[in-house]
Length: 337
Image (cartoon, rainbow, N blue to C red):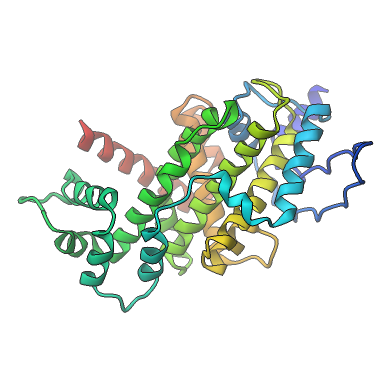
């Protein structure tokens, strides 16, 4: 048993497990296994998902009856492609999709963007707060949205609008797993802006689409947590097997695809999250950003020792991004003080 646990912890899980057939249900078809990833010293997801689900540590044991039942539920909802799936998260304000479409238009003017931002009071407050923060080192305060857009730029506005639009999705609790995991997923998303810009630039892909894909991936995890809460039958500390947690991550990405499709997200962003199609530079940027942000969050919450973080980072580029995230977090804390 101990040898099996070591093998699971220090290498990436082979892929999602197939839930066992239930006597009261039709046998489930076998779903495609994900392509195996390169072996790494530490599988960050084997640290992150037990923490997300409120476990102490994961165990290399077969899934029990409750884990199998919940996995069947996740699979059924992810496979259904039902528009009702998007109702598992709060609806985003109607101005947001319009604004996000405008932000993908390279020819849109600052005045047009300002007019759309002005339709949502929460966005107005967030934009003005951001542009007047110490990060921009303004000598005089900015009072109008158009001036604010001119200061932070369209790309800065893209990131800010997406963050403001998505934040409510990570707040509303439904039950134990959502209450425990949703704030952690938002904290993870909080550092995505830095990481996505970093890896998108080196791979010559759109930073905003990379950021959207990262946020969408996190929304998929929120939907999966809500499914667990609605299905019931499992309490704190019970979903402990590594096989269940690897499968949870797999179905969370598939649920993100369902939500992204019905929210009319860019096809490239959806494909980057889904990971079922051909490998892409955008998908690799999202994967690396997600990994570095998880490492930073695990260290912050004492789930990974700082001296071990370096062993988890994939090369000099990831190490530099990690340092950039820490610097941005320090600047944010200084601004809030």
